[in-house]
Amino acid sequence: MNGMNRMVIAFTLAVLSGACRSTPAAPPPPSADTWAVVAGREIKRDAVEKAYRRTPQASETLSEEETLTAKLGLLNELIVQDILLAKAREMKIELPGTELDAAFAEAKKNMPEEAFRQELTKRNLTEADMREELRRDLLAQKVIEREVIAKVTVSDQDVTDFFNANKAQFNRAEEAYRIAQIVVTPVREAEIGNRTGDDAGTPQEAAAKTQMLMERLKSGVAFGDLAADFSEDPQSAQRGGDLGFVPVSALQKAPPALRDAVLKTTPGSVRVVSNGGAHTLVLVVAHDTAGQKDPSMPAVKEGITAALRGRREQLLRAAYLGSLRNDTVVVNYLAQRLVESKGKMPAAPAKP
Image (cartoon, rainbow, N blue to C red):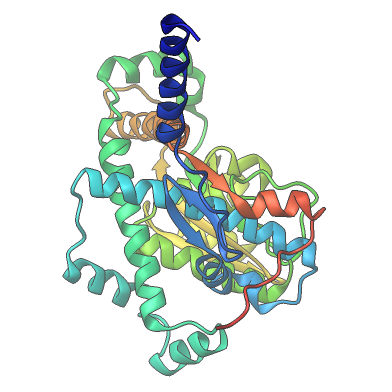
């Protein structure tokens, strides 16, 4: 073998050797109780199971398919929440303990202490579990407030342009109330238009879901976001529950409880109207008198501003969350395993 050949062989071996050294070892397969990995952070089966036990469905006997569908949805919510919590750490957003204490006390103030503890025991949860869920929710909301809500602007020109394009809406023949709603029914719906696919199927589920929604409203979650995520009315859910202005003559023909929930409530208040196991959370957004309106009137300007802000917040929120998820490496192992097993529930890990 001549010198040139020896040099070529030596160079080739060196390159191959270097290539072998620089190739990272394949990561070990995740354990059976790892249901997702988000940028290297694991979401365990136990986290999803706890989230499921906090939902209305946990108190009912569902089919395996219904249970798995609910848990897949919860896992996707936890993935998004994990991404937001990582963003909170990056932005150095903190949640003072006093703020968490106040929010926790507010969330359970309408339930007697003994009933609260009994409900926790029934769901195999602890007070620490509930506080941790609330802590994560509040931190994620702080990110949304800073990255989405604070960046939405509505100018005077935007208000004028909207008014000019919709002038007929502001010439009211009679007094009217602008209303938003979140509908919860005790039966499975043929069509669900909310963002999470959540659908109560029994009177017990509907009651628990309504209580959950009221608690989230008290913790500061926007009515429009809850309507878009949970309302079982497919038309209004897509508009954040907004029904627009309803004339008083139409309200007078509504069932008495619904009529009074609007006519006897100040704007900004939420009341629950229940009938036959169904519940409607009614928000009175604004009250308007008859006659021609124009943007110089504070109520008109505020109403248009609120409507435009709500639309833009929903759009920016969806875009922001989509962008965050695109920039994050996410592996949903539960989804993979369900596909591989043709929809069968992966076995729970053995107890040590």
